[in-house]
Image (cartoon, rainbow, N blue to C red; front, side, top):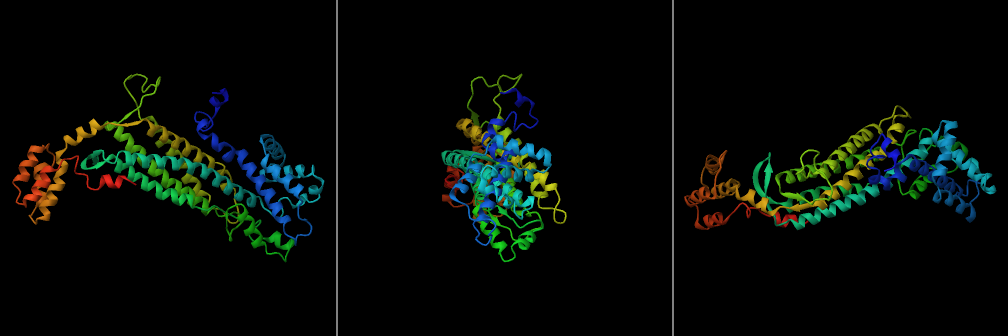
Length: 453
């Protein structure tokens, strides 16, 4: 580890920097600056294609290539130059405009038209589209990690489809299930939310200082500026927001971040359940050479990956919730509360990626403990009282539930106790035979089939 990592205030740039490496060029300030450059250049190119804007003739192939290269070859030095300009302008978006004007000076034909950089735009026109592109790209990376987790959970559901286990309701022994069915529950929940995230569309606007195309219209009153804006935003693969103030309302961002909160809550629920199954001994964890579980208790193998995931998902949710609750609110046409908050959107994806990496590691360490599953089932014959009282009800014998309650509630009952009770039941012999063959391990309903997602 480089020494400067030890000086990082955020663990995203310190302890966990490797886990967020693939997000660094997207959600960092460098990333934001690059997206602003992309939007500014593409808006300039888009305007040049409109034959009615005679002051900006259509670009030549060489000019387009030069501009495309500015995007493709944008690097840290370029970003630092923009930051240096910003130190004088005290305005981040204006610094991008001045940077591009510097670049245009190196290409004589472009320099003549440099005033069309940032034409009729307010800073929020550039920023909302930049954040839309940033979140879209960061979300795609996160979705790839989620898909890996989904596939792993799906494979574990199939792998453990026939491994009977006690359920726990209110922490107490309950009707048996299979370990595979418990994974299948989470797979279906995750799959539903992740589909919503996958089909979510980010939105954007480029309609000027208060959302009315004031500057656009005064300059070129005969142009259909709304159509020009729609066409441009489509080229960015974003959806168009028609009615705004100076700020794009960011409802789309709030919806997406809210979906991630839902997804993270499912993963927190999963992490806690697996933690519990490890605690019960239903899972062992593969050992890693040199790893220590406790500074004082040598025997320990802690479920650290699931604890790490739970903690980082919680951190992500705290940021996701605050951002989504705040960025949709703006005083009149504009205030800057959203500006400082949106700069933290990368932390949401950072904490999620750390958590997803931890879950992946945790799943790969799990080893089912068949003996412990069977041991707990063999000691829990009371869970069959549900089956017995249901057969009593089926045969219209009064107080079936109460009979089983008197026999079992708060007591340790054995197979012998149940066999004796069943033999004394006034039900058809085939019903008795079915109940007498029943064991806690076989009383699983459709669990095995439901495991096969």
